[in-house]
Image (cartoon, rainbow, N blue to C red; front, side, top):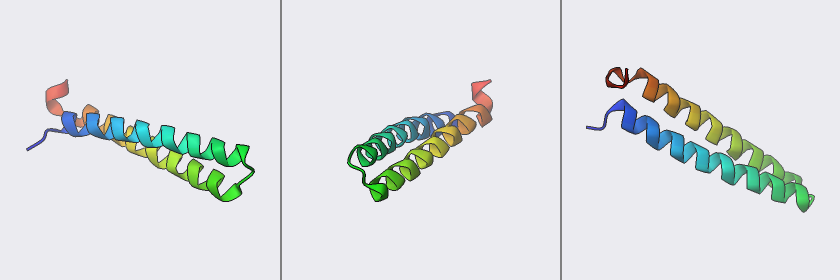
Length: 66
């Protein structure tokens, strides 16, 4: 079974990647004046930020990490 620290690290990495992908998608939507892509990108960016912060919380909650 995976410990909270390992899960937290995975969520941080996946969240950071999703956040970056969303930022790029949103910026492309801006550049092409495509409101739909801009909004989808910003939503994906926010999802990534939430996942990344959740991962940080998991790492902090791991009793072996203190």
